[in-house]
Amino acid sequence: MSTKRNITLTDNISDFSQILHVARSVADTAADIHSERSGSIDPEEASTKGRADFVSITDFEAQTASIEIIRKSYPDHTIISEELPDNPVQLNNIPGAAWIIDPLDGTTNYLHGHPMHCSSVAFSMDGQVIVGAVSCGPTREKWWAAKGEGAWKNDAPINVSRVQKLERSLVGTGFPFKKETLIETYIHQLERMLRVSGGVRRGGSAALDLCYLAEGRFDGFWELYLDPWDFAAGQLIVREAGGYVSRIDGDNLPLDAGTVLGANSQTMAQRLKNVIR
Image (cartoon, rainbow, N blue to C red; front, side, top):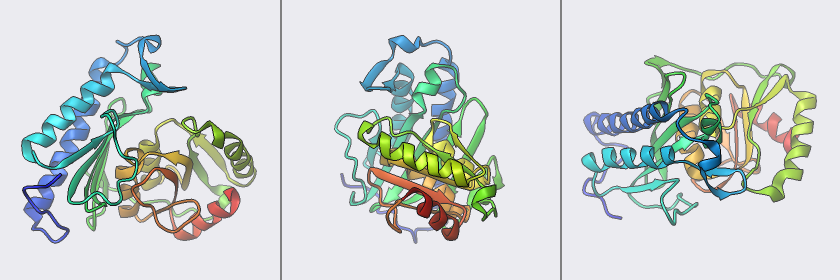
């Protein structure tokens, strides 16, 4: 899809600030909808996209509101959102300006009243994410980042932790529920990580896991399969907080579905890779 405004990384600060303002507004509006609808949906009434992969009316309401906000300012930008039909899972080569949205990350948690869920929105130019925002309704925590401008939480700058010893580290992870063929591989990885790390936590929202890594709650993170809307915003927030993200088996992290590994440093990332490979 073509764009009316050819935004680049060298645009003036007013354009850049407007993109960030819209991204934060989208994330906050979606999180507000989560809170307003909380407790009103029976988990057994939610639709399913696959085994243990649920979608609720709140996902769709948050998505609709998010798209409306973006369309008001940028009617010709590409929008990719988790619950839209025929979404590509390879976004690295999408040209021009694109918005990548997860209107409700952690739907299963949300349906059961578990507070670990959020909204996530990223803006990319020619496949490169330059703005990201994540908002958690239950905790009122908000994270955002702009390329080259650092990472922030609730108006305060954030940085990754300094922990470099695996035995003192707390590592976030996610289960490969969308790819049951990966479960056996994951169980072996989890066993090895439990034996060498200070602890492993699984919360059920990759976007929040990455934000926790960015602010130092986690020292590392890995997951065997994520879609690009799961990590697009979070990976930028980690990078801008001084952290490192990549594939498990490589140095880059394209906007394509696949593995994601993050750490507070490249050195720590390599230590994590040595454990789970």
